Length: 269
Length: 304
Image 1 (spheres, rainbow over the protein chains, first blue to last red):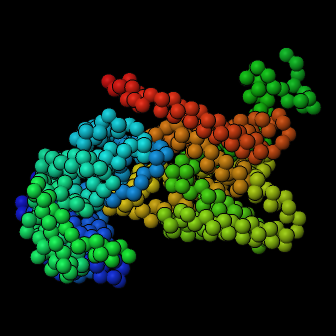
Image 2: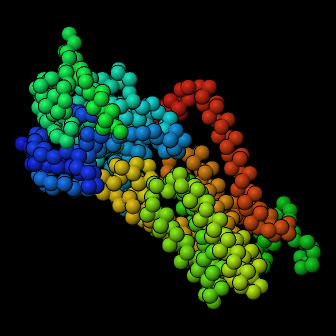
Image 3: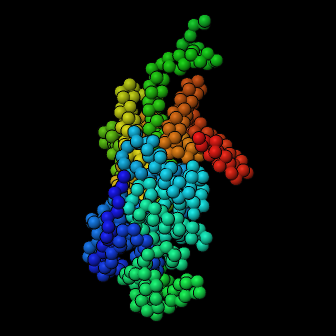
């Protein structure tokens, strides 16, 4: 059994800075994330959203400041942190079932071949696949599945490791709007059922508005965190971007950030 | 029962037992089967990962580098096997360190391959009477294997297969899902290097049997066929090893009766099997496409 998540903050960043090689990406980030919170990480391309996840995973060290994850310094191979990286394309001819991908989430980092506890592992794989409602296609080659189906199985892989925290890098990218909402709600349900803390990188806040607790905005070398209605405002974002940005609302409560096109083009270059 | 006459053509017929007796009548054939089987098993097991990692071409480059190493070693008075091991293992380590960046470097690999062959050519030219040596290294001398050679092959075969099994799960993880594997603490880069070094040993081990060039028939073809017919990695490894052994046995058997080189038969069997496998698997896929829920039917059949 995994122990219940510790009460209080599970991520504490103090004056944190991130660099890619010698290039400083963002700095002076101080924030904390509480256990069980659902955080959407937003910001333009190249602003350092994935870098934040890599810091939490312990894949890169902080350039400055300090970072605590689940009460410790981040370290690689932390079983308490589940991770679904940003996907490009999985080769359609890859001769491996979705189920095998999920299985790797349990014992893929152990040496040797599987002996002994295989039955209990198969059960855990089945549970994880069932929890993302992917049982009907888990035995097909993963490359032949749709983007949404692949995303579910990769999510199951992260869950099979029984983490306390999920880091998801653009799980909604390349999905149509209907699937974006379905996957976002699935993640939210799973997080609630398993009491998981979630950091989810996204481009568009709107499918996530009903489920996020707070948003963490990474832009222009800095980081801002707060309730969507507090962070995604004309004033806040203009200050963060250091350029005039306007937030518009439609009558359904959806938010649209306008004036960023030039900014993201600049970061992409 | 007629006497078996040494001068007569070897017996071949429906009497399987007698066929086998005939096949294993000579020590050179026994040694050929022993060494061939060992090399085939390790080639099949390693081949699964070579194909899955998309390293067929890079791995082929290794064998050319091995040729330069083997001929160079002989020129310096050392053993060909030592030269092979040193050259392929160092080149393998470099390729492994490049990791994913190796993909798409076909120009670099192609140039290094050609240059290695050129070097090998120079070394064989400088070494008097080296034509046989070069042919032996490139294409193997399977009917000239001593029991000592078999012992060396056995040790190398056991070591390579055990090493692959020892890194099996993390290697599979790193191959299929490098980023997550890395985050989960799998030493992705170290495994990439280790795998290429294991491959180097397997290529060197194969030199006496099918030679450094033709070993790729046993590394690539069985694995590529296996990956067309199974979506389970553990089965893929097994099927690949079994196919490699069958190709080798078939090649040796045919070569015993028809006096052409074994390497020709093994590669021909591997190649035609691959073509056949492609056709068959395409037909299966097209049939399945005709019934969009075929996978679902299969699943219901397998569910308890």
